[in-house]
Every structure is written in structure tokens, then in C-alpha cells.
Length: 373
Image (cartoon, rainbow, N blue to C red):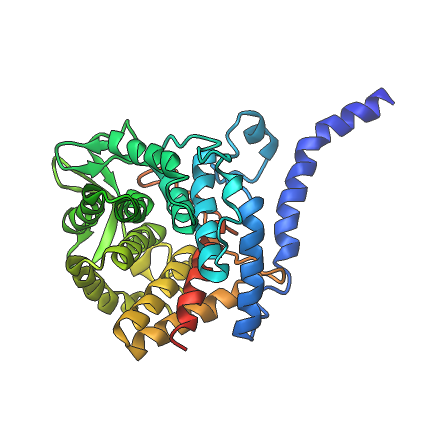
């Protein structure tokens, strides 16, 4: 009896691995059998809304063996990573269902304060969704002020740009553009703080000047603000998506002429990076190794541009991207094959799985695309 118990205890780590990895395998059976856009759109939206309450964990590591060790060492889940997952599925629910505070109590208390105070810029995407959804903007102003102050505390006076992390003093990450600029723009508009709007536009323009490769028109993962040299991969897929998300969301709020010039410049370049199957790559210019997260952002970007500029070509690019996303959607509506969380500059995930970020962005793309059909 004792020997059996010891054997079972020893087997637990392996049984957890079998369950987690086996679950992925089973859910991928008969993947991509979607041929009706509207039916697909309804199902992926249901998944997205379910994940506002209980999203799947985006792992900190790529480890798929002895997962229990990561859990025990608190190296499996990270609340900061989860915050931008929540942000995108929340944002998509507003655009698709006009949720009107349906989910706000998951994140804010009844007095309008954060249940879990934001510590990093990543939370700004969730704050953006909450502010956009709020019917009473002043009831939640204290929470929004807290988020704004976190961003200001991370602003470097030398170039008036935002640090990704306090320890990254001279590094400017493309992720930060997507995290903070939509929130800054909306916060400034709602609470009459012109300096917040100006900061959002300044962050985007500065990154476009210093963080892009001239020939490809793709962003680097980061750049050194003092020496002005690039850091990390040029054309990292989701990093490109971060810039585009910040760009079009901020433009939709501010209608800034300089931002529309940047949009116009990029939209006519990025179509050459689309693969034959409609996908975009985790390393965009290589056009191999499809990543659902950047493909979903591109579907949103080109749907947005088709709507904004009335261009039929952009609409067709979005259609191809949707076709790929349908081909990697599981039977239960979960969009698969998104690159996992990045570990640092030059250290990119080799895991491709489901991700709430992708589910939410795809919903935004669908909503925008429906307006031009």
C-alpha cells in the first residue's frame, strides 16, 4: 500500500505533463474545419468573452516537461503577462457587444479603485479597455490616475519616452508603444489632459524615427535611446503588432495627421510580407513560421485601413488573414498557433499555442471588417 502510494506520488509530475500536453493534442484534432465566416466569428467571440472571466495561462517559459516544477517555483504564471491578455479580450467585448461595465467588477472594486494595483506598463492595455467601457468615467478616475502615474514614473526625462521596466533605463521597447499609447490618448481626451495625448503621439513618433529599419519599414524589438542603435530582432511578429495596435488605436482617438501619415506609409509596405496562406510570420520578413498573433493584428490593421481609406486591396489582405486564422481555429473556437511570451531581447518563444491576446485582436478585426463588407 505504501509502495503504491509512493509510486503514485512520483508519477504525479509526469501525469500533469501528459494531461497538459495531451489536452493540446486532442484539441488540435480536426482543427481548421471552418468554412463559414459568420459562424466562425460567433464562436471565437464566445471564447473571447469566456476568457475575460477565466483566461488560459500564457506560460512564462517554453518548458513542457515537469511543468509542476515551474508551478512550485512560481515560474509558470505571471500576472503582468496575464494583464494584457485580459486587456485585449475585454476590449474586444466592448466593440462586439457594447458590454457597458459588464466585466469591470472583475478588476475594480465598487468604489472605482483597482483590486490589484498596476505595477508595470503592461496593465495600461487593461486600463484602456476599462476606461473605454466605463459609462461613468469619473467614478473610475482614481484607478485611471493610478495607471497614469505608473506610466509617468517610468518616463525618462531625457527623451520623454516610457521605460518598459525600471531596470531598462536606456532601452525603448516596441511593446511599450502598444501598451501605453492608446491609454494615454484616451485618458488625456476623457480627463482633459492634453499633455497625456501629446505624450502618446510623441512615443509613437519617436519610436518610428529611432526604432525602425529603413529598408523593410519594420520595427526592431527595441533600441538604445542614448546610442540610437537597434536591439533584438528586426520584424519580430508580435512586436510589429504592438506598434500597429498602438498606432491605429491612438489615431482613432486623436485623428493626428502625423499618425495617419505613418499608417499610410506602413500599410503599403506590409502587404508584401503576407504569406500565400494568408498568414504573417513570427519573423515578418522571412515569410516562414506563421504566427496567429501577428496575423490577427494584421487582419485588424488592414480592416481598419480599408475602412479608413476605402481601399479594396486592403480588404482583400484582411480576408486572406481571416482565412488563415480560420484554418488554425480549433473545433471549440480557440485560435491556435500564437507565439508564446518573449523572454527578452533576442530570446523568442518556440511555443505556439492559444493566447487570449490573439482571440481579442481577431474579434476587433472581425468587428471592423463587418463595417466594410
